[in-house]
Length: 294
Image 1 (cartoon, rainbow, N blue to C red):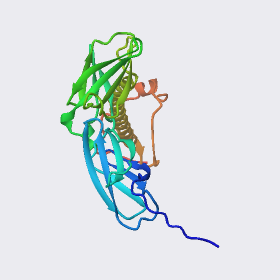
Image 2: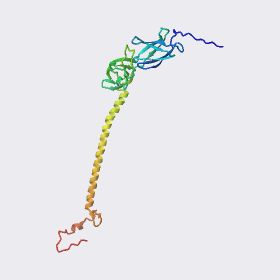
Image 3: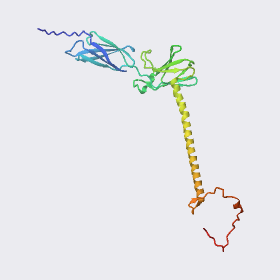
């Protein structure tokens, strides 16, 4: 034996299993289940979004018959804090949760350039990768002194660089740059951090490596170029001298070539002696003396 029992729906129950599915910079996807299974009619939900930073409220209405409801809350702010309340439209019991949107990203390519009596912080514009960031909002810069164990707020700027002076020799510093915090520091961007090791040198390790590599390249490249030019000139000079010696030797060999012997004849100097000096000089030939050529 069995009996079928149908429960009377209680519209005073709160939505079940309210939770966040995905949170972005300007939106949040939330999900919940109806107060009871398999609703037989459309149910009207009220979704109240309280901005805990701005102290403002917004209410959205969602009408559906589904047992599982997924809803996207839009037009939120990066780094914001919100309190979400979901209940039936008849003001039944409520389900609530808190969500924090994703803050703006940290600035890229933060680096330090050391000058004589100060340093310069440089970074890429955050607007290049964050469509929700306006340059007029600006950036704020903080400095942490590890020796003093103290953090100092240096100021803010709408530029992509910042000058820092009055650094103490022998102190180690950490600099952070982030999108300027709004509403009393409650809505900030992610910080970009860079370590700066003073130690009496006045140079950051990363900046030192970059500057040293740049200096070395600036010295080595011209030296290598000059060496290549010098070697090229040396090869040209040697080649010209070789050609000149070769031409001189060829001319000299041709001038001593004997067509009868088929070779060149060079005197060693041993056959030159007193006999050549004592031999009479031939001054000429008589027309009546025949010349015989062997």
